[in-house]
Amino acid sequence: MKLKRRKIKFSALFFICWFALLVFLADGVLGFQVLVDCFGSYALVEVTLLLLVIVPTWAVYRFSKE
Image 1 (cartoon, helix red, strand yellow):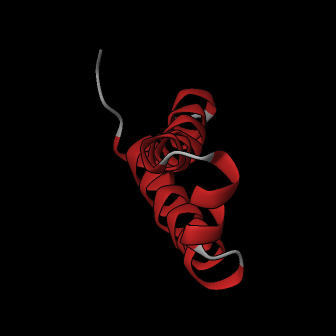
Image 2 (cartoon, one colour):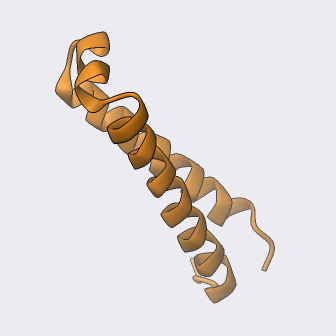
Image 3 (spheres, one colour):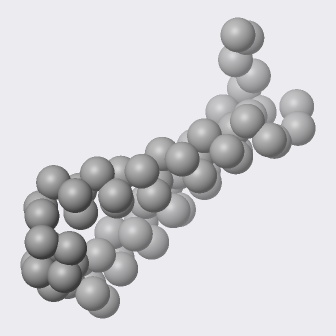
């Protein structure tokens, strides 16, 4: 698979913005401990937040035009 610079740039920009938004929501608005209390598992919350960042970033890379 050949990596394209423009696609990587769009993906990286999306990753930074989306990650910042999720950090703001998880740490600032909702509170991480509240999420852990709701879901019952620290690992589940961590994996969910990681997937909420990685999967959309991969989709932006996959579907962006060169």
